[in-house]
Length: 309
Image (cartoon, rainbow, N blue to C red; front, side):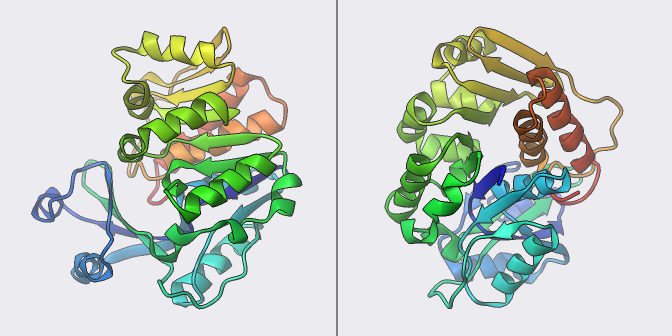
């Protein structure tokens, strides 16, 4: 297997809202808010018209992109044996992904992420992790990890307790580890741990400019470049309209964005960028070509609703 993704198995529920909905519910636009109370989460959903539901989660989106590009991939993520869990598994199998998890009835339901799209195409996410957040080391197959060239992890998955043990087991058995920092909220919440991972455990790091700026408390982009050069790893940073940059020791490669796109929804832009880049990487393309593939994939996904092509 080329790449095995391990991440939060979350069903994406996509809805269009106006800015006032965001304000009334005390949400911060373009960020992700975690809900710990299932009823509070359900209240949000009550008045909304659902556009569509998709088997989501950041790493799962990347893995689907990799599968669509013809790579042999797998995914591990915890769901419950309920309606959404059923939909989740079906959704991945339809995309030719080896789903390496046996679901059973759990105390908590399958995780759900409400993706609220405002008229400016920005997405604001409300997540109830449900059983996805309870992943533990027994849910993670050492055998599947060992037979994949690279494992792809997400910052969203990292949490103290059982998820951390699952994370450690995955890293300790892997041939190569790639990870996305996921979200600035995530970085701020786990800063010392993420810094330790970036410096000592990961081979490939994906981040957007906000996330890595926050991680190392950089004052400008030069500080990010200098920090990345010293790491002796492959660091890939997306910069919105400024394109993307890959830093591999002393080598810095830049790539610009595609122009004149009709952007309708930024959901999944980072996930599909990672898919395109990793496709290039595992298929021995140059870093420049890999950045180009990442840009091409993210450009396609932002011109449609949802994180799947």
